[in-house]
Image (cartoon, rainbow, N blue to C red):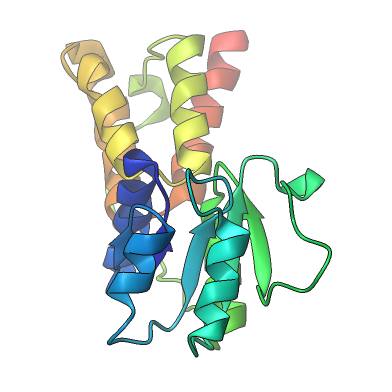
Length: 202
């Protein structure tokens, strides 16, 4: 379950987790979460620390008092400073910094849910755009696409590719990148963008 007052972040978590066959429940704040879990016991919670009204630490305490024993991972853009963490043990299991890193997210899920990930090997005959055919859309666009890939924001990537897609010169690059994100191969996606950046600097 994802508890976050930021609608965009809730949607991004859904985008990342649903393709991995997770059922994703979301809540906009602590009270909404407590109401939702009255009749269910999620396998894992992602709880934003800084929320209006009831903050994340207060929510964790109420979840534990209510008998929820699933792992709880705290989320914050300022996780390093504790973001108001109480001195007593709140019962959370782990923490992650925002923006989320897709690889780290998989590691956390694997560690707390006992999942061993198996990476699909790309088909040997998968079409790959020749490097000579790839034209850079510019350093700023490449940088933005790399940043979106680091947090696994598929919808954001797709939206950012819409402008380059309208330019025939960028067709091979857009096709190659979309091929990678369709299979959630963010390493391959980053490799393509980094090669484009290197070619632009050379």
